[in-house]
Image (tube, one colour):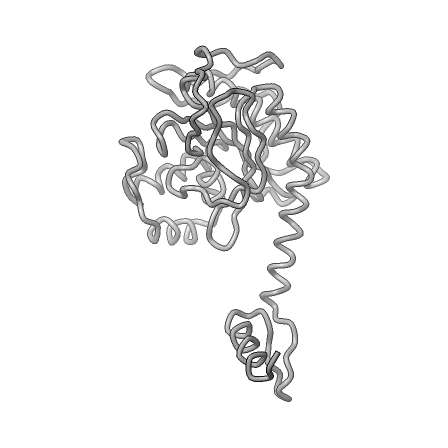
Length: 263
């Protein structure tokens, strides 16, 4: 590589904090690079710990399971377990989620300090994917406050009318949200109400990942097997009972192989 090319690349890296130019003209690794490395290790750790739990959750409920994290201002899928049904979720590991409607994004952003949460909400765009999409920053902040208080989140037709999703947080030893896991399904496979009945199972799975990740009981975590608080879907109370290892009740499985968008 030519010296001028190397210097140009180093200057670009320095602009992003990845390297630092010393007084003697030599370069050393920058603090931003160490921060990115630490973040990458953290994400690898949580994925490795969470994956067996995601597989068991998928085997129990039969639906698509995702794990998502906050990365460089976006929420991205870190892991995925596919549904057993022919109608699959069109999503992939490494893909960003729609920030204003995705349940995993709501959980992760709801955990941010209030000033940061407000700043993020105010700079986002609010596409109207469906009539149920979040319309503006004020509505989004209200939703994030509710999610922060209740400790779980949903996307009920906000990204695509036929797709519903329930999600719970994975917390570190300090109680902060480090990831979110979700179960998503099209309503031709299971109704929104039946999907919501999985919330206790989803929360227990997230709690199990949190305990293993933190190596200790997690502050702010849910109580295993506790009922899901309040909220309604189509006028029906959100169920709070547990779910056994049997397949989820719902509509007959459609014969379609057409992929759906992720929720």
